Length: 117
Image (cartoon, rainbow, N blue to C red; front, side, top):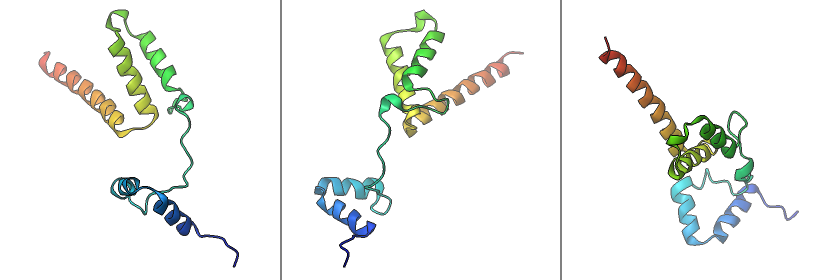
């Protein structure tokens, strides 16, 4: 016998070595079958890029440079940073906010056209 373990045996060993709380999290959130304890970690946040190959910091800097100064505040900048990080990380919550904002802009444009003769 070679002493080699199958991937399923390794996965089970990793799962069984976890705390019951972590096991419950995996079972409820991901599902044991979909869970991959051997997946490669994501890139560090500072080098992750979006589809345009920009980091979240680059996106925020470009966005804020294009904004009028009277709109800028700390909260405004923080909101831009959160959105950029969420989009770069492809998080559903931020993708939904982005898509809602586009939809709402289109709605406003459409209704403005309806109101004006």
